[in-house]
Image 1 (cartoon, one colour):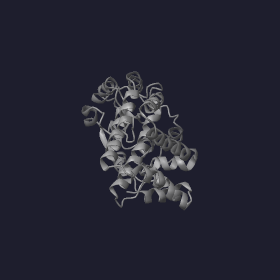
Image 2: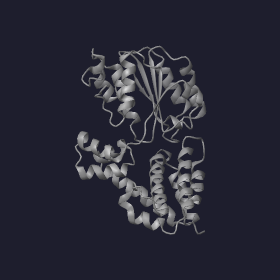
Image 3: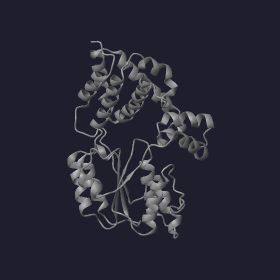
Image 4: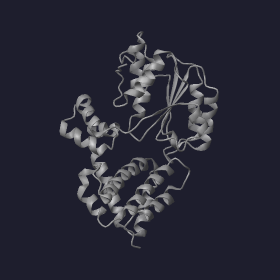
Length: 332
């Protein structure tokens, strides 16, 4: 089954959801997981558009031209509900989940379904997850819940068991390069560079193509890591305090640092695998010189653990301080 959804690189997931619509077997809840910017939101919104599309031919949904499709694309459909993270803490709070579940319990205003997209659900506090569980146990008849998360690690097993799980994975660099050229008018050289730097995340590559400032932001984030490593204990703790003030910015920062430590580990181990951050080869080589595989692995694992802390109610300043103590080069 071919598809025309505005989703690239995850054909199997699209086809799975298409079959559910075609055979009238739409579930009440779906759990879409995968790394940041891998395509979770694009898949969820395309699915929501297909569910509401007014095209008579089910196989042609979403048509992209009807009133429902246009409203869904703009985010203004009255039957689409999207959750918001708390601006101060970066958490998905119980009040927000309750507001979403209250709205989804209403009858559809003009579509077939009331559809809620709960993004970044790994950041939902335990009580917020409990609030969603009540809706999952007794879902409204015309409601569809689309729960998006980076992983299932911080999600209650009872929620996972009540959702249809769809796990999206990182895409090969050559596929991302091809997609950028064929669908987003990128030049071949530009597409190749962005595909390599994306680390398998098509969403990031598209954003970087459309907004060159993202490449500058990426360079700034990696320069910041170099700055952290050059500092002693007091300097690292001061940086930890500053970074903890913007919890929403920590996820993309730590995910990028993970790719950097992966590259360092590959260089230390002298493997033939290609590095993601190849544009910073001199910096990577300098960092890898004299470093043991254990030190590189410790830094990589510590970064991942700190990233996981974002979904928990922890003091991020302390978490970052612990992370920076695990990074190499600390003299005093």
